[in-house]
Length: 218
Length: 320
Image (cartoon, rainbow over all chains, first blue to last red):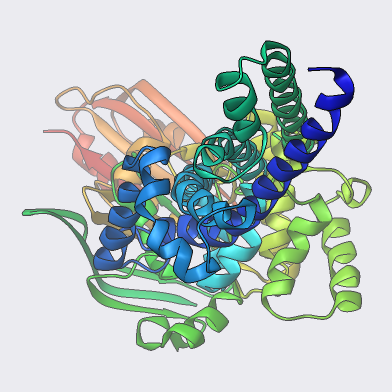
């Protein structure tokens, strides 16, 4: 395979991976962030303690976390069909990717929020702040560096998951590596794909680290 | 100003019950600085948190500025808390906000507009001497400066009452004195009533008008400091004026305000007794000088001499 043949393939696959990761990151944050906040505030000494809700949410998150992504991806095929109308393609892969990453991100959100000192929460309550003010003006801003670090880890995980999604027709760099590198022995393309993946992960990690560092004010 | 009555706080930990506060009454008068002194685990921190209901008492009532907090609903309680300032041992500042942002926080909670907030923040930072640090982040400040920000923040809502939770325990001695001086001047100039908890006698000695001693969830003694000093067997007095353990037959005299009167030499001149001074301590507390002397009195007129000392308004305690 020549470079002229490889280049369009690589661009198309990279674009598909970027799309899968971008959309699933968006939905992961939309689901995982509230879920992580809920895990913290419903805890026994939280702002809105609710033992039942806390246990239910914890169970849901643990179920999501205990399935290997490749298994989850196949298990949710009926759900994907229900939501997207198809189970093949980049858009369809966003459903399993989000379901795989949201519980993971929720746990990271939970950990980041628990790092915020209890005295800060109490200080806000002593000023007369209600629960939602405490979440919005104390917990989330104070945990921002940790949340960004958690999001970075999640995006890297999503890049890895998205390669698996390629195996069942999601497209992207994983699909490219399987179809050309594995099935057609195109070693050069395989190597280039690996390099592209490494570069993308490096970029994401560096960007995340930089933002997290700028937010840290200890 | 603050009335706590019949306060009990019991924590339930599965089948075990831990009594943190076991029936406490506390009366803090308007405009005074009241110190609750006790070792860690005595329940003083829980007591302070019960005053603004960060901890809900198991039994008892809490009244602040004429409002019974224990009878309020959640939203009324939040409004009442805006008029009760609180400062913390580890400052509890938001590291994501600047100094000005931290002081503005309670004003945001109160729903005060941006322009008014900025004006009030400038006033408050001026008051605590940090006008030049408005744009700094807490991480760039020293411990004393952080506590000043904490104080400015606590005063944002023009509170009638300030609660201080070991506010100087994380500070070095010099900084502690400057923070105590600031609290004292706020007390004088703004008429701010301050309830503080501490394990440092120095804090009580430096700024408190009244004190309570807490142990094992109970208040052992409580009242205006000069009165406590004049009370026989007071633990506060014993801790304020550390003397060696009393020998059998020795006499301890405690005096408040008469420190400049030569009572000992008077006794020796008037009565046929010999006086041997075993120990003594003198302090300036709550605006009066007070002290304790441990004496050995021997001689025929010992009883008359002791009666004379009592008659002079001194507290005379004889060791058996």
